Structures are given as C-alpha cells and as structure tokens.
Length: 160
Image 1: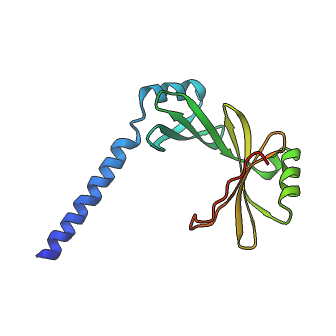
Image 2: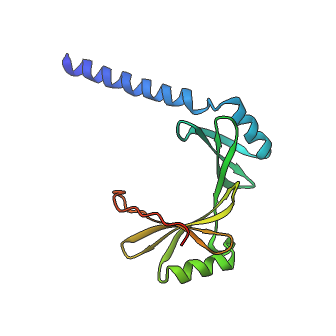
Image 3: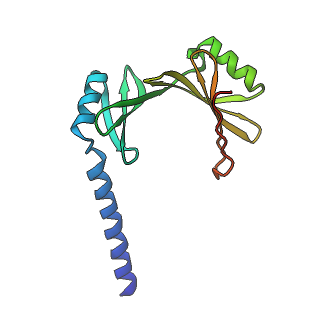
C-alpha cells in the first residue's frame, strides 16, 4: 500500500511539474511578444521560455535557419543568435581565432547580434581542453572561457 501511495505521489508531482512548465512556457509578457513580432515579423514556430527572472528567450525559425532571441520583461531586445557554417564566418575573424588559438578544432560557430554590435562565438577544442571564445567583427578576442563540465575552472577574459 505504501509503495502505491508513493507511486501515486510521484506521478502527481511529475504531472504538476509538467503543468507548471507548460503553463509558464508560453506566458511571455505582451510587451515581449509585441517587441518580438516587430523585430521578427517573418518568424515561424516560436517557442518561449523564461531565461531568468528578467529575461525571456524565443526560439524560432526564419528563412529555414534556427534562431534564439532574448528580451527583457519590458520588451527590450537583448540578443539574437544563430549557428553559422565556418564558411560564413568573416575571414578576419577566422584569422584572429586561428592565430590566437592555433591547433584548436572548431566544434561550433554562432553569430550573436546585440545592441553593442556583432560577436562571433566559437566552441573550440584541442585534446581534452574545450574553450568558448567570442570575437568581435574587428577580430578582437573579447571572451575566453573554459567550458569544463564541472564549471570550477572557468576563466573570463576581456580587454586583452
């Protein structure tokens, strides 16, 4: 009997958690949805998720490309990101990556557009070392962070 009650309790908790997630998932504030619609009028299949206390993230498709865009609760746009093929990365940015991180293999490349400008973000690795790198459109490395799974060895560099 105890096992049955525990099982029923676990099912109830799982259903409640799923209901809460589903209920909050599409509940982006109207200001956020309006700002999104103005910035991305051709976006398809938009999924909203609360990124943190003050920010919402939309995942969507536009021109057959998957994007994510972040907005503050008041509708202020923060960032838009999408993956890139290496061939789409400007040559000066690739040159900066290769000269600063020789012998690293590019695992993933993204372009991030923010109010401050465009950044190219890379996940690179050499052996067991994995790094997350951000390079601005001028070829300057603006972020270098270890991407170890335990998160204890993170380092952030800016203004090198």
